[in-house]
Image 1 (cartoon, rainbow, N blue to C red):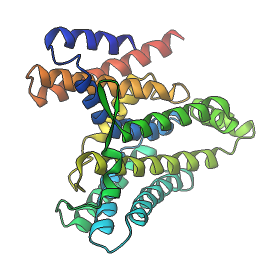
Image 2 (image 1 turned 90 degrees about the vertical axis):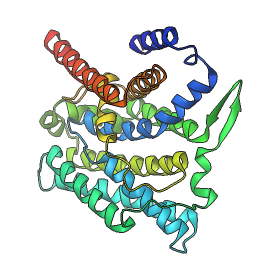
Image 3 (image 1 turned 30 degrees about the vertical axis):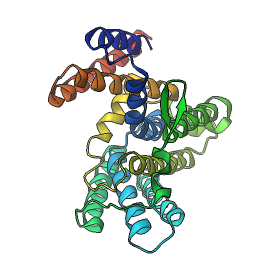
Image 4 (image 1 turned 180 degrees about the vertical axis):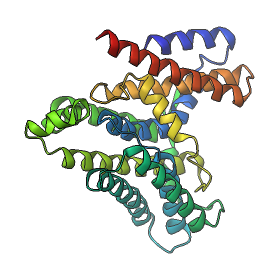
Length: 302
């Protein structure tokens, strides 16, 4: 939170447009897709795993939704359900490979990332899907809140964070996620079905990626087969900046929202300052390294 406030103060001194309600509403709309994907990434990282496939699964889900809803003769709601179902199935497959075949999450999700990318290009023929029915883009509509306009997708993102925060904090199943990430063998010996926990985490992450697909479609108004190529880095950046340990077992999901906002504020502020997008990526990489280094130092201190 301190880092976010410092960044806001710095960019407000650099550009008079930064502290306007319109700009903050723009940042919220830019963050909502990565913010929802980061919830799924947080759950996976809390179990000491990592998911490199989140961006490509989001792109696959968005292309399926838009193709089926605009050209496949299917009702938009059914197209949305199938798109979310496809990403949930992919997440479940990730979980099965991790729990039953005992493959490392890094390798599993790296393979899934490439498969999802290839399927996205094949299904869409590398063409952007346009002329979408209004139902697919309704979450991109905005409502007036004071002097700013807030997208309905942003409200959905905040609701998802509140729900997952409550689940992790107040339920036994949520505490099991932390236990598995902290020490999987100890969790198993204490009676926790670790394989079921991991499978549920990856399946839920896939579901959240499907919701991220819907938000991406709502925000851009198209099904873009080239989307999702940087979201895996962006979500890991948000999660790590938010204080979740890459070693598992420690973190708060709301911190990932703060981390996503930090990335969004930096990119927006640098854009207002006229800084090239290449340097924005450079700053993001530096932030990741600093966050992981801080996590390492805190673990050693503990």
